[in-house]
Length: 196
Image 1 (tube, rainbow, N blue to C red):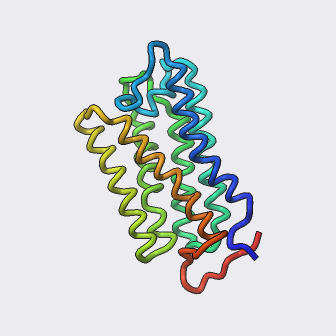
Image 2 (tube, rainbow, N blue to C red):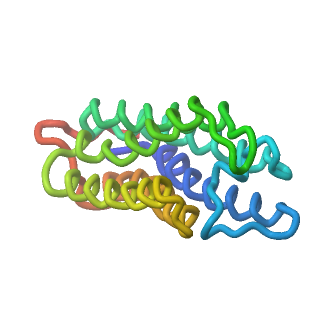
């Protein structure tokens, strides 16, 4: 029996496709162009963005994919899977509480984004303690830290930093699912794989 069901591979693959596809198509629809190095993902779903529904749907789908993937990564510790699902729910909240305008702010949006980025960075350490989980979480936290630094300082690469961090966080569940299904899995001791 395989460690994870096939449908987990679908949800884990759809997550980065939705994220990258959403920010690429959303940026292409902005009149006069959109600087993806300087402009945030949230700006593409802000109330004043052209075709904001594109990035909104992508974020909703991304969050749902994280929740579905978390449900299927049964060989991993439940705590880590719950934190991955929390990251998915918070991503849905990011879409539900858009920015009022490209340069505006929203406390609800900011809180949802902070929870999403934090949970999606920390879940590997809680799901598979040890070098793999801790190392993966460490790398993700460094990338999120870069984004936060750009955000706080008003840096010129805030969009790039956000895309690198969010993209990495969207790819990790896919890499974990592929490893659990086809390779040497970072499974918690004493937890046998569940079939699918």
